[in-house]
Length: 112
Image (cartoon, rainbow, N blue to C red; front, side, top):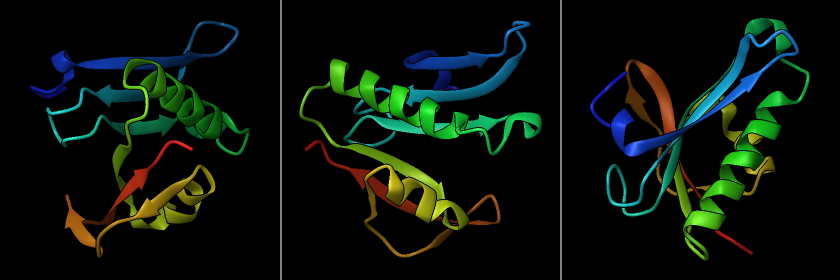
């Protein structure tokens, strides 16, 4: 939890028993970046590889498109996940940098 969480909407993914297995947050445009942004994307280890990350991101992008029609979405992606985000339509827009000791890239998704 940080000071930005109160200015976000949170997408929760639960399994059939109601256990939280996936999460992301969408930060309003103008809070972290000029564009809306998606962050804190995570799935529980026991469901990784089942496609929930893609489903979660698609839902997050759909929510952004509904709330901010025609706007790009910016993320700070772990560099090792660049291909995953590229498959969802994101493009790297900067060189790698360290965030919390982990290589990251800013990536941008532009609506079609």
